[in-house]
Length: 499
Image (cartoon, rainbow, N blue to C red; front, top):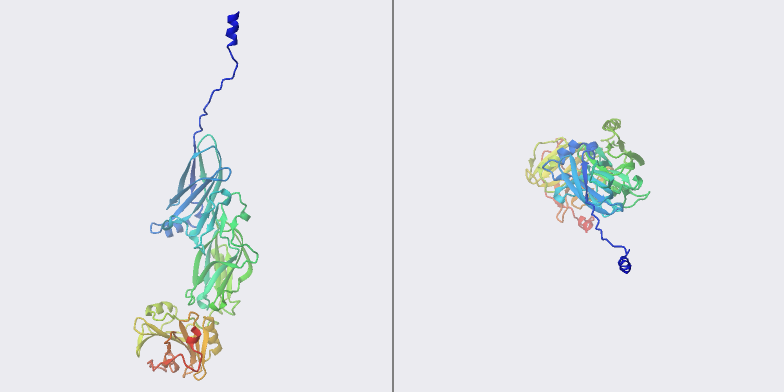
């Protein structure tokens, strides 16, 4: 009995701890299959292939995917670059089970600049709620190479690897912009404007479309933002300037066109008006036109925003262009002092030449053209048969108003600097202070505007007072008599003005 009691009393019901090491879950892999075609297909894939994605260009289709966990913190990102529109495969490894959000951005990138976009930077990538694309500091106008396509998807990683397909969709729209017949105007700048231009957009799929766009400043009274433009300091020489621009936004666009001369100081008339609106859709192609029709400044242009090219052509054909040439007195000649004969010939290619090559005229060489607008003739004088532009004479009939010519000089950016009452001669100075425009009526009764370079030793050519047009046949000799200096004691000097 005592032995049995001892045996039973030595036993215990205490719990025994056993350390169990759990088997770790194997990491999962997410495989993405991304189609690059749909993002660019609405805008013409062949054009991108032929113009930008050929082997002579540094451009590639860039595909970048960001992966975020269920708290919106970035897990990883993957970049891919390809010259062809095909399927791109991307892989994210070592993932735990859970919910993830993938955001893919497709745009063209430049291999010369570390495979980055010419127009866009991706910012705020560390968190999904700050992920955005923003115009870079060097961009002003975004052309067709700046198209953006985006895809996003919530993906659940469970017990197995996952394979998912993504197809980025185009954001924004392309617009073919045409500036028509401005070669018949005195304007030097024509532009497409909109109000409240976005500088980027959020890539967070949880953001509503109405709140997606980023702005420097969003105000109902915000000034107009330039979305495209054509500029020439010497005036337009072609009848149709066209660009294809990318507008990142969709929805309502408050737009207009405007044209300016240098003296307008940034002010312009809005065409068709300041309350013009157009609805943009993602992935669409549109057409816009701005036409100079002539007439009174402030009502001398027309503008349209169209859904098709045929609609734009119909609009252009309907415009009354009968006043296009009536109000243009002349276009400023080529005025690069020391310039070549070939440069002048290129500039004057739309004019009828009076001679095919410079002809000797005293110590100079003369190349002359028939008038195109209200001028009857323009003469270029060179120091050699190939170049060295020295001065330019432009002639008008006496029936052209004196005030009209003076007004046109002012419109071209010239400021009246001197008036010589004894010779009834006006002296104008260009805005860059490189050119003098001497205006007078010569002895034959023709108005003459004579251009020459301004410097401390600037001189007008003595024959200008008596020289008449080649067209009249009255003047056979173009020899230069003794020149006289522009600066005289009895008038305000150009040198004083320049100071």
